[in-house]
Image 1 (cartoon, one colour):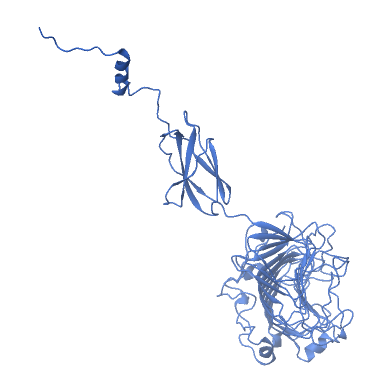
Image 2 (cartoon, one colour; image 1 turned 180 degrees about the horizontal axis):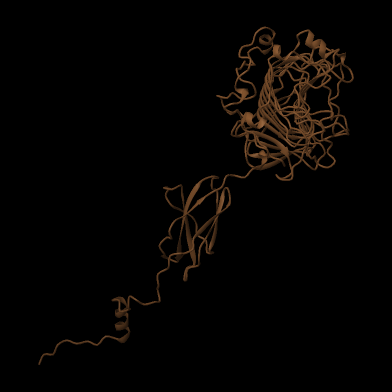
Length: 557
């Protein structure tokens, strides 16, 4: 009888076949999937780096961090850390990035988390200290904050170029830190309305004071009316601050460079008693130099001072001065148009830095005074500026000592010049002080000193009592009772509190008209093509651009 074939398999082989054919349950928890990371955050460490953090995932031995550029870029892995933080570097400032994270263990990987975005900040400024003279051509860059440590000279014919947006700080801890551009050297300060160049104190905002540092001093090779030598005030106090002589120049067309959109703040340190430096000093600077859109703020001495020379300038703002806003002397023959000066108080200087004047003036002009005047107050070349379209606003009564000052314009010691289409308002003693019969009086008689089409409003008087006067009608000098506050669109009592000036003449302001709309004769000859005649008075065209906006500051400290 035939039987079916039958063979018994060994037990071990049976077990092995069971494993091969999947006898294990698919839901066996011995090989679980990995969860998606949660709590993914991305924080900027700097303008070029970021830190990615996330919660730990059970079973994960590492993580996959991916980054994508912008809002539509492709993700790529930038790191596989084992920790729950990852520092990513090599980013670009002011840029957008997206991140996502997955958990990993061997060949197992979770899905990626939702995307998390990051906007990197703008790159912080670099810093550098200038402690030695600049004797070869050099550029200062807008991405760097420079500290002037000491009396720094641009010398030896070097050119200093300064990019738009550059910040230069006078070292508060180094006595009198200043920048001198000496005769034969040049400065090219190329600021813009959106990125002005700022010279200021090294102290933090809120702690700055007049006299924290020295100032910006430019020395050219044009003529002055004092004989050689004439030592610049504030120099010659020691080996670190040797004498600077600005006399002896012969080239009225000398070129010291150019200044555009430059602000000088909290300068004027006194290197010796009564020898304060100025915010801007222009000594014997020639007509080849270009200057426009400048502001001096909170200087301990004069905000602007010209010692001779022939340099022209437009669009100048002087805000709160320790002494005079515009001081012009020693044979200055340049042309200035569109000037604003504002004084509301007596400044409080840095301790030990020097003294403020009790009588800040809007304009103070001298023919010549002091040692080495070639012919006393009548020294030649005459001090003979053209000053057009000026707005000079004083403190009003009860603020400064008006027994010796408080005048909008002081013209004395043989000065000549043309002063046209201006506003002089709110000065506690008088709008105009014309002094010295024997010298200044002679300049008036000879027709070398002309005051034309000036609006005097809200002053104690038009002329200082007991001094020289001119025929108001013949000179088109108008006395008006309109208050200074009503003459402009905005003249805030405390602009540092956040409000801003608007120097545009108000709708009913007398400044909107009354200007000399066409120059003739001696005025036309001196004005040349640089100074434009205007039908309005003051520094701002009622129908024109607000040229002071964006780049000026009205900080108290």
